[in-house]
Length: 110
Image (cartoon, rainbow, N blue to C red; front, side):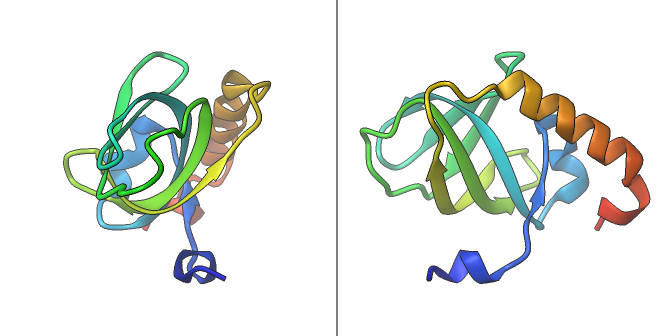
């Protein structure tokens, strides 16, 4: 069991990253680029989020879930990754998160 799997993480959209600076977050997106050190993900609007300190498999592609620490520049410091299937529906996932954050606004903010 990885260290990250024992910690609590809050699922976020790119628009939430500034609200969760220095917090454990989960971000789901599609891999745009991957050089083995830095991973760049896009959301459904093609907005980019950089994953720093990745040091992972440079062959990772498609949809992924990243667990890490949100930085003030809206990047995420890597802790763990989960690969999703190619038929993952990112739009539907983001809609669910928007609804969840709206309904639980007071509970989710750090």
